[in-house]
Image (tube, rainbow, N blue to C red; front, side, top):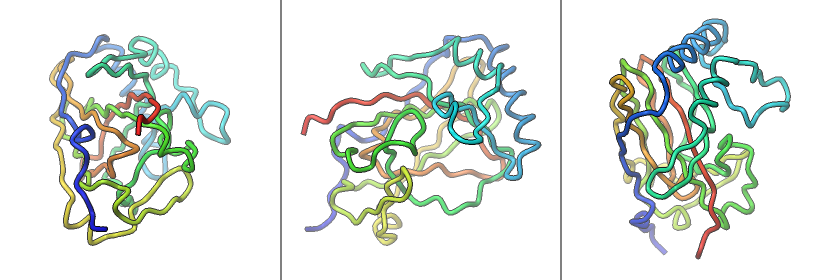
Length: 214
């Protein structure tokens, strides 16, 4: 059986709307994350409330926590999405980040990969940088028609020829005031990866999970 394109229902959508928060709260979270990044070996840091109590992950970021509390949920295209993370990198991340599926909404990497076919993990990735665009790359292929492998909480695509031939990208423009753009997609059905340039990134994620109907 050959590869098939993504189901039309799972094609990523570029969305623009106004954030229901204050610029002061967002700026405070940005400053807090920047300070963490400056002391991190990879110059990258994020606030993931679902990681609280897991190992050495530091979730004591009061300004990020206050910002998340100011905008805990969004409704986009009838999806009730909850705050999952806010993350910053000051540099281009050069690690090997192959196209993958997420196994959960809260962290993207702590879900049960054996049950992911029974669930739809929706992600809204917002670009909250007011300086630089953010690129989301994805593969226009139904993942069940290509070779996949699990590693940790991620499900990777093993077929580099498919990802090279069928990959597409969406540029998410920078924020203007509270006018913010993002991409809504089914992260458990769309093979995807973020692509940094030399400016790194400043992004925010919201998500939810639904039972798969088929």
